[in-house]
Image (cartoon, rainbow, N blue to C red):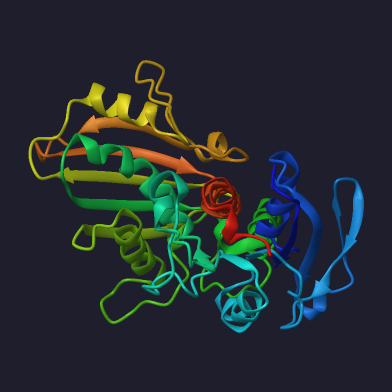
Amino acid sequence: MRNPLSVAVVGATGAVGNEFLRLFETRNLPISNLRLLASERSAGKTLKFKGADLTVEEARPDSFEGVDLAFFSAGASRSKALAPYAVASGALVVDNSSAFRMDPSVPLVVPEINAETVLPNSRLIAVPNCTAIILTMAIHPLRKLGQIRRLIVSTYQSASGGGAAMMRLLEEETAAVLQGGEPPASKLNTRYAFNLFSHNTPVGPDGANEEESKVVLETRKILGMPELGVNVTCVRVPVLRAHSESVTVEFGGPAPDLEEVREALEAAEGVRVIDDRERNRFPTPLDASGQGDVLAGRIRHDPSNPNALCLFIAGDQLLKGAALNAVQIAESILARTPALVGK
């Protein structure tokens, strides 16, 4: 039994931060001391952990003295500013932001897929983009059935991907519209309630928005397939929590038998098949919300391409897409390479 750890959470008051606290309790992470860190405006708030009120402190460069394990979920700029100080203080950092994901020296980890990329000298591990995690969890089990050449993905991304503020915006807009009023002003360039729109990240010169580019690059890195063809269209939908994705998987030869596909998905850790054609019962965001599995269904061949098959998948963006994946990374390291964590 390893010694309890001193743990810090940067971004403790956000939507992902709240999930960290819940997971620490339900998964019994060995914590002796928990330090909750956030922005200056959130300092002084209290959050409950194991029945006790813990005070949130401002995240500063000197906040990590004595910390063994630091979880970051406060955005890329805060991670870039503070993660180096946490590492220098001796902490192992698991970062949920995009700050370090494509750094060749930083492992980009989904434990069920590539836990072995965490090396003995790794002090900083990146959690992938939520959409890429959900996608690769469903794609990885299929690789043993044949060479995958290309993925075509359309996403249906929930408000939780934009954090607690976007979830509140969707709730407030929906209430206003239902009451016949005008939705509150927001930073979005369109109404959110009863609408859907291209993911609200900047569009580059190639026509892809930032979210789409992240999914392409990170999927290749997670799977270790730098030449994999990936075409993604990311769309925000008026769902509070859990992302869904429609996926076409193209193989280098004839697509595998559908029963083999089902068996591979059912055998995969962290994947649950919901694929009942008779009852028209397939994955939904409501099914995915609040639990850790990636749900897979609508398993069928592509009638336009004998080498392709189609899936519909859903996963909780705040859990497997963020906090749960980060905690699983820590658990994997504690099990495989415990010397990486602690002094």
